[in-house]
Amino acid sequence: MFSKPVRPKSDVTAAILPDSTQRRSVLHDGIVIEGDWQSDGIVEFGGAITGDLTVDVLIVTSTGTVEGNVRARSVTVEGQLNGTIAAIDVNLSPTAIVRGEIKAERIQIDFGAQVEGRLTAKGEAPS
Image (cartoon, rainbow, N blue to C red):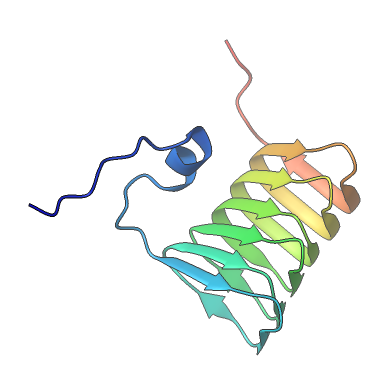
């Protein structure tokens, strides 16, 4: 009677959200966290954190600042990150500023992103 229409997932949404039951935390600019953060879902972070993040999917928005280490399946940086990123997929947008070390299977760095540090990509070569 009150069913919702089913909308197809976009390519980005499908890559990040394998199903609609995955938790999502949205932390806007103005939020300040001192300490570590853990989540088994998606974290969209636009505030400032001093501490380590262990999440499934991390999106550091253009207003976000991370001072610490990140462990995740997927990381997208649009803002600033100072520390180590250990992930399967890392995407640095044109507005990203990253200082530290990135260890990933796949790294995408868009034109304009600023990276100072060490990159290690251990993806398999296409056959």
